[in-house]
Length: 194
Image 1: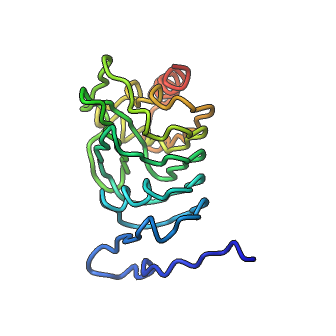
Image 2: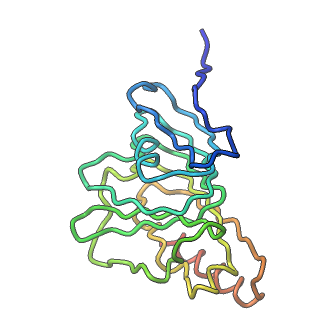
């Protein structure tokens, strides 16, 4: 009995003139529980596909993409995920008044808006179907780029992940002053304690 599943993805062509995207059907991978993925480009549909994998428990994702996705409250998204590592991306979870969740991934090298422009909605709670079992979340924080854009870590929305037990934030301190690094560290500690 083999636990190896070979995925026929054409994501290796780094010289392609158009971005290569994931086009997986979650129902064709009903038992995939561990996925380590390096992909240059992703779009909202690709992220929805990953979030729809029914048995996914471990995800390590490295991408150059900056994107935002609104997940309706009724949609199950990463239903069984317990370990989530976003290697080159900063993440944010904002709940909306209709109980949907706006999920943001920001890669400082490839555009996007730092999180200062997105605000926390104190009145809303995260939809119960959004990452309901995630216990570990890891992500990168580009301190210099975040501070250059007047960004903050005060509104990451980690408090909406009810099963979260451990947060690891990797600080990229390039182009950052010591005081900025200390400010970001303090904000991350506060965000992880809530």
